[in-house]
Amino acid sequence: MAKDITTVKILDSNYKIACPADEAEAVKQAAVFLDGKLREIKEGSDLDEKKTAIITALNITNEYLKSLSNTQVNSLDLPSLDSLTDEVKSHLKSLSFSD
Image 1 (tube, helix red, strand yellow):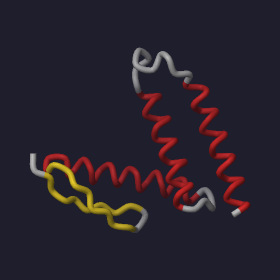
Image 2 (cartoon, rainbow, N blue to C red):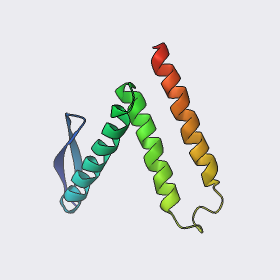
Image 3 (cartoon, rainbow, N blue to C red):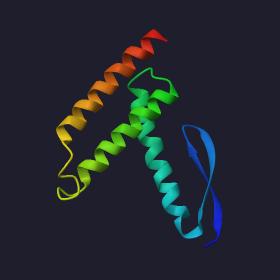
Image 4 (cartoon, rainbow, N blue to C red):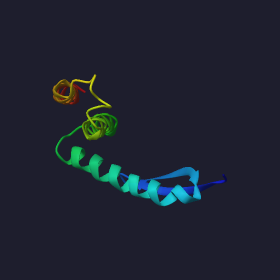
């Protein structure tokens, strides 16, 4: 399947993404979702973009794992993922003040 170039805007920067034409709209929707999540984290803190991206990725991953059925994640301890998320946020906040 031929790939087209789709341009998305995330945190005021444009990115060109190669994807099949029939997935272009989904890529654009994913970019809008990601942009919103990044802005949520960025507004509530003074983290730089790299740290904001890491926290956002961790939060999205945590939400995704929670949404899977119990049979798919029965070996994962989801409360410990929440704890890990909180711990990472705490460490990154402390790092942002020491930079």
